[in-house]
Picture 1 (cartoon, rainbow, N blue to C red):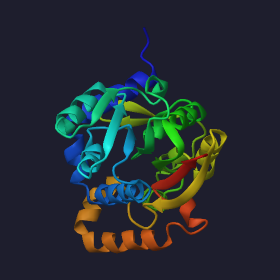
Picture 2 (cartoon, helix red, strand yellow):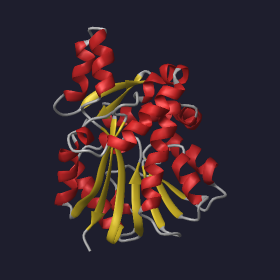
Picture 3 (cartoon, rainbow, N blue to C red):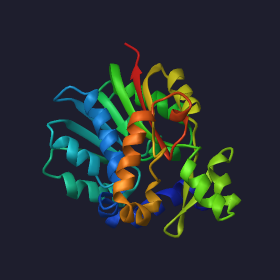
Picture 4 (cartoon, rainbow, N blue to C red):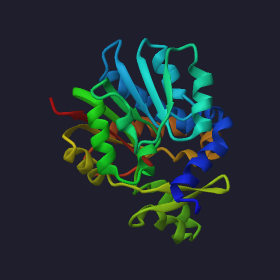
Length: 266
């Protein structure tokens, strides 16, 4: 039987699962992006709330939110990521399931107050419209969805690879359709989004946008970790610039990621 790109995506994340939590928390830029996503979840979630973590990875977000008193159901398609998450949160009351985002209807309907997805799991789904509908069915009326999504227009990436003359690398984010992105000797099924295109899938599922901002507009993308560590004071200043201007019209459509908050219709 031929291995599909979805299978390769799971294998890719399996292959990095053991060190994924550590590599994430040690990355200065990723820490800042994570803090802003978690802050958005907390801003829209009363305590305690029923939360749904979509693409939970090794359980980093679920662990921190459970410590604040929230009840969390976490899902991920990668069995090794699920193993890591279960080890991390086994004393936190977090329920972790091996489940792809294309199979969310296996979860109880209208069971969560807030759902969130951090660092681009939704970039890997095959049918965003179908996934948006399934997320909507998991949320109670008026429920919130917070998503950190990999965007198309990353100024740093254009500048860095433009200077290197690597136009092929720049074009990857602007590809129409799915791109097979390398990860640890494997390939990850990835589709890059402009915020409006992403939002439209959720509007069709009965959501409306609450807020939108850029992540990594002025601040560098996470893969420039070495630069960020050498220039941490500058990076913190650039993150503050993201905070100040990242929600402005036009600017909010760029950045390594965008952070969008959507509300399900009442």
